[in-house]
Length: 288
Ligand code: SIN
Image 1 (tube, rainbow, N blue to C red):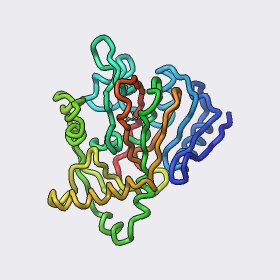
Image 2: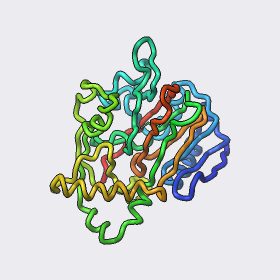
Image 3: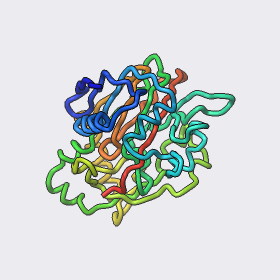
């Protein structure tokens, strides 16, 4: 099976056409897709897919172990009510209700973040399948934290090299309480950890900033004021349009992003128009 690759922007991302992700793939094809995705900075869009839940999971697990798969760590104890009832590998992001219950987490990820950064082993790839999309709106923004790191001065890179940042899901919850889409039981569990501010990608060796406004609550050894100033500077630098792309969905898109090198932001501008996405999430390495 061959495929066509078209860049979606100079800074990040490719569209990979000509593949049917529902079909079994050999190891060589999976390796080629992975390399194409890594070369594109960790963002690939596979258009015009038609997947069952099982096929979405089967495609995803070829790229690594999935949160929620039998025997693996659950995605997060607190999101259990948003998981697919029969397939805990699938985290559902949706504003739809079904039998009086949310079909998925409404307003999920409506702030810059990297998935599961508050765990000791955060996510590597996330693979989102666009099942139902609004007539307009509901885009996802991505920013390239490798490009952002590389654009820093050598002096700043030296200063950041030994630093560690504290990540906490409570920060994510605080971002969402205003709406509110996070309830108190969402805060259960062990969702706080410390990671290096600059991480080295396990496959490419590239260095990236690994802090995000969604979960990073401070820098180890700094006062709250010092942390806020330095993190604020890094966040505004990293989210400059020069390092970002915006994806507008067509139903059937599968989007695969690398949480080790990207932040993303789900734009919550579609009101009551239904939006329903299923996401698998790969368990990554301990960041180094
Ligand atoms: C997420 O995984 O953060 C949600 C992304 C989206 O719904 O656009």
